[in-house]
Length: 483
Image (cartoon, rainbow, N blue to C red; front, top):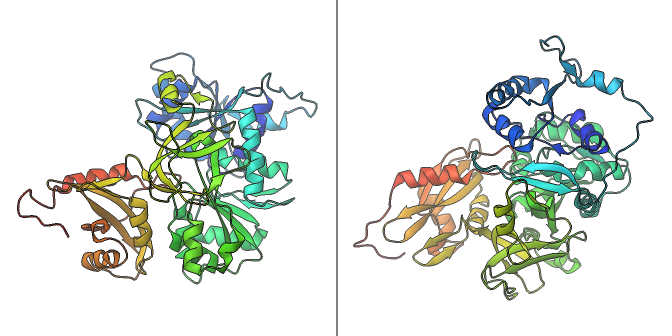
């Protein structure tokens, strides 16, 4: 399926599995070339496409026709009053639905480990990774997500998380289980979120830190008072503590979860401890930014030495790799046995994320293994540095990558976007960080620019790494002293 968060997308999360088929939701930002690649890799038999994305789909089928005669059947979703030019004989989704039979017999899976959906991770075009979800895993993660969001009967959920991403963190099935109402929106904007919350008395929503940032920095004329408690689940990238603090000032109740496409979305939860309520607001925000503990549907969550597979000590210092195990971890990567075996080496799913474990057992991410900066032999957590940058009053977004250096190996390079109407200099940003961190952790370079994003709100660090690489080395091998 190729569509934004529209009712048909929600309906097909049920209709497709009920027909005995497997649902594969595609990123709406893909071009025709990528869509054709994924259609071929997944052996798609039917392609449901929203009218706004019809040209992308047609382009994909045209590319696909050059290498195969087995093209998927295209079904067009008109959605409301939309009436694009439709070729004679085109199958229309709404017409198919109207012909449905109420006495249709649901085709239940023969085995609970049978696939219910296929989700592609963002990867290189030459080697897409298709993550296979099982009926059992989706069922368990859906129930766990109800508990994580403290979702009572008949919630009103506002869709900001793309349903094509980890099947909307399994929430389409969660909301149905609780008899909830879905508020769909094609595009996510701060105004749209506030308007919908106020109009429909939304009780729950979710989104990446970039979505939270848009709410925090929305102009006063866009903001509206919340009609009641609104629970917001966030994840996808570790939110800086300052984001938690300011969201709660607006009246939102933040739930911090952590996971990957391979863990059906949410895999851990930073469960609030009553004793934390006596801490200062700043300390509370720091606690809430931890990734926490496994949810009730998961067997195991640990931080291990990737070589010895021994658990790291709970000293909040020793770094290891975050690993998952249980029913809510993927069946594997479609048609990629090698990658599947590598990711499960040692009996645990290896995330590639680096973190520490606190004395209370809660885990805290420090970085992706590929993003950690090693400067003069010192490990620098980009997540920790980004958290400090976000606390600067003029900064709206920040991302840190390593800039190659002839002397230190790498130095921290910060890409910063300033709030509208605010100013800051490179030296000011650097000094701000030096006052709050060990000096070697502060950025040596600050670039003011918009940050490139994926459709799920994650910063495309590989793009920034290329920009940092193109800058060249800051220092030479001689006559350089450590700050």
